[in-house]
Each structure stands twice: as C-alpha cells, then as structure tokens.
Image (tube, rainbow, N blue to C red; front, side, top):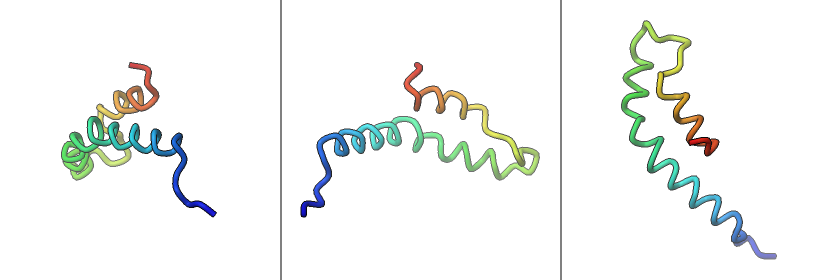
Length: 59
C-alpha cells in the first residue's frame, strides 16, 4: 500500500501554499490588530472580501 500523495494532491498543496504565502501571511498582522480592537467584535476585517474573491479565483 502506497501512502504517497497523487500528482493532483501535490499540485493542490502547491497552489494552497502559494496562496497562503502571497495572500494570507502578509495580512496576518493586520488581522490580529483588527480583532484586538474591542470595537470590532463580531465583524470581519475589510480585506476579507478581497481574500475570499482571490481564493475563489474571481480576480
């Protein structure tokens, strides 16, 4: 039995890692600053909609 990932899985993982490097990690600090502000409870940061569009590949 082989537990090596298929080529499809390897390609998907590479796409995910590239997306994280290009879009998620750069805004982590801004996200934490946003949620630490007590006036922002139960709200999403304004850049979340852009990230969702990027993740869906709409842009």
